[in-house]
Image (cartoon, rainbow, N blue to C red; front, side):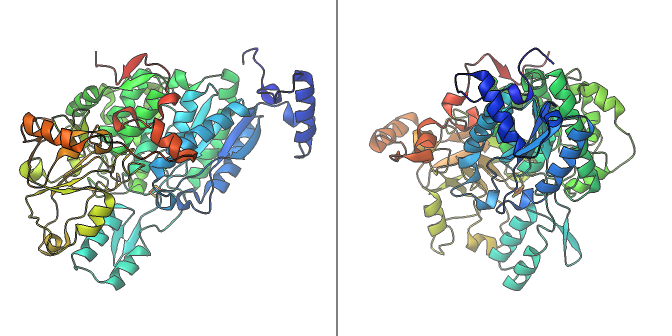
Length: 575
Ligand code: FES
């Protein structure tokens, strides 16, 4: 380790007398029952993100115990400390609204406390991004540990899981294909254990991305939350965190531009969540690296979807674990990866891959026999989304990927809720549903409302998918021909705000285009009529900070003052 202050002598409280600060700190730490020997050891912090409101983090206490055991076996002193914990369904107005608050909380606690390294225990969608944003902003060695996915449930003899099947059952209920009794019965099985959603939603995506980028020990992304292997993985993370403290390997040495390229490639190969793009943009932004949407799209053109997991396939994360975990995916795409990237275990991605077990399995397809030939996600441009938009093409109806239709516009979430099921709504199956006012500032918090429900009267008639557009996000567990993250959002004057009912809209995914077929003179008149736009800024509080400083989706929806000046782009163009 360097000559820098370490352990209890790091990050001293300011009294104007460092020796006194150490003396006082030691006096208080003795109240925790620690001996002098213990407090002289390397200190490994462990974020305690257990919360009674976070089902996905139910197993955090036992992971902390296992990680502590690992730290002590390696001669360190583990110290757990609390940070904010965010669950998708227990965060008003949205979990995304609070992600940056968690990132700030975590970053400042890393900076304030005497830590030689830290184990970041996350899991639910926004927690891993928040923790990696914090790690990227501070120079303490860090290891990402996740709670792990839930095991699959079973409903009437068929495997089910959150939240792809949550949406499927809800859609079936709306279409009156199942009754309330069956809906309640299914609800008992959708989340059958501790852990995160077990399909390839945002939590699973971010776990895979964290492993691919090198911040997690190999094999950690897919181990089920309830498996003993998850505890052994946590113990190993604890031991490794002590060595990492000694080596002083900081996150910026691991999360390099090439490592981001690996993460973006994996995002395509696993059929990952659109949210992964926003979160990776935010993490990269903390390192001064701007997202290059076109370069991300170009990666997808070379990298097919290989993982047969819901919502693009059939399996669950526990099946990916049994199939060898992320290493099995990495092996298939190794020719697209930067194998010399350093990872938290001190070895390169290529070395880790060489050490991973190889056996036959049926969850990860061979590169030349993919689930979906194009990448999972495509980046769209056009006069409706000059700053870009995303579509998860692998989870869309192929028939709708090139489509022109009449716009049916909803101005806000409230407007959507009030009118979508109105029997008098003027809507047909080949129309394009447009939701606006649901972006980072508009809602605020960029809710996962992009999965606009099929109007009830069409659902009852058997319509399963329609082209839907919005400045919102969508859960990674959802599916459909849904264009998201339209940038700039309507609330800051984006062209989405100029669409009127009956306008023609053209989606052309192969050409990467999204266009409003209205001439520029008409749009200029509408813009003039629209006048000033912008969210109302409240007088005080976090909401004020959020609305004043949150950036658009292409910049990760981070706060502008948390990003250092740009020094490069990710992913870097392929050599
Ligand atoms: Fe936590 Fe899905 S709600 S991972």
